[in-house]
Length: 483
Ligand SMILES: CCC[C@H]1O[C@@H](n2cnc3c(N)ncnc32)[C@H](O)[C@@H]1O
Image 1 (cartoon, rainbow, N blue to C red):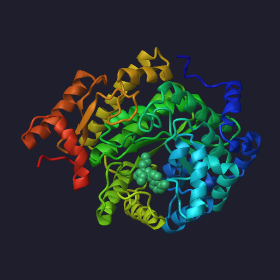
Image 2 (tube, rainbow, N blue to C red):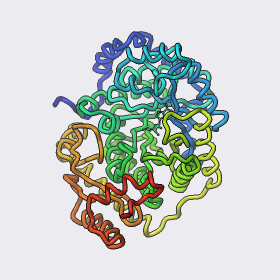
Image 3 (cartoon, helix red, strand yellow):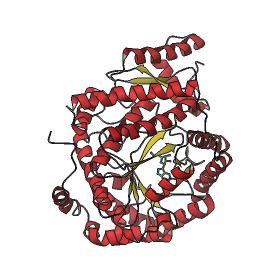
Image 4 (cartoon, rainbow, N blue to C red):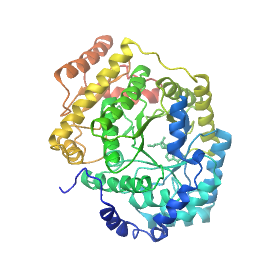
């Protein structure tokens, strides 16, 4: 394995780049010098990194939807609706699934079909096919900052095009856009390719352009223990910082127990800062993003708004810098622009009513933060050990050994032995740690919390709890109580 956690030299970067830009004809329109000049003209209020920093300093939680359709004009109409009718503070372009798999020829068919049929035949915005000119039309039509949101193992060409187009943030990472999104793409490949995406940001940062990077927090969004997703987020933040990224939003997906969710965000922010400082990455600005409920949604729209409001409450009380908004169409599919705007209005109403409020520190909250940080540290320290100090190599080896193990992940590179379940308060615990190197004390803690549930439900602690928890939300509950 020749992977190293080392900043690519500009020569190495440019060498890879000459190949990357050939992956689709639109790559030839990316000119870094011209892009630097274009990005210098982006006003502060349209720069994601700057708007996030301002929000954190003011103690404000920003609301951002997901959104993407095939054709440029329709996408502009959608985003303007979310900006004006929804009140979105930040806008996305959610990229379609073909682009995420680098299947640009099929994107082209999807675009032509969308024109022919008069509706979006792609489940997102095909930014690579639209190229810099098309992506700049989108960026210039809106009035708030724009971010690419996707799930792309090889996002190198996509990243080149969106950043050259004024989109000042890119979501993803070598772990978070592999393990939950791909079946057989190696960790070595995706970590290498995301080093490129981060090095591109480093290139712009060296020329005075501030860009934001956002590791994808929720992972599979299904009973992921907070320390597992936090370990991934911290590792991706460190890998990004090595490539020169200076503005990082670490993310977390709502699990449902309010105290644990707030503890997870507080632990994530402080532990990311701690590890960045430990490894000498000065001047990296860290913010947080809370993803509203990533599990199955109720079809009933009133219930869906209940879920959206709970997620907004957790984000506000946690003090997250940003919250990613769900819609009342979540159970149905791609939302209409009206439903998407409703989700944002619901979210902002809750955020506004809770403005200035935070969950006060308590013994319970402090204890949960301590537990999450301790579990997270067990994983990261062991990853560093097996990598002989090299975080990138340690991450590849760590997943091979199951030191970090994402539940219900499709990737064959995920170990798949760890199993989670909710305790009697709905907090997600380690039912079977697998090879995750938790200390005996932490294993005993998780076991005791699950036994509390077993005693309450008069049943043995076991995998049936996991199964019941997965089906619970579809029944309108958080914890899968026995029938
Ligand atoms: C990891 C992200 C999953 C979420 O991402 C939403 N999502 C995907 N594609 C679009 C789109 N084109 N427009 C609005 N939301 C979208 C799904 O609903 C799901 O909640």
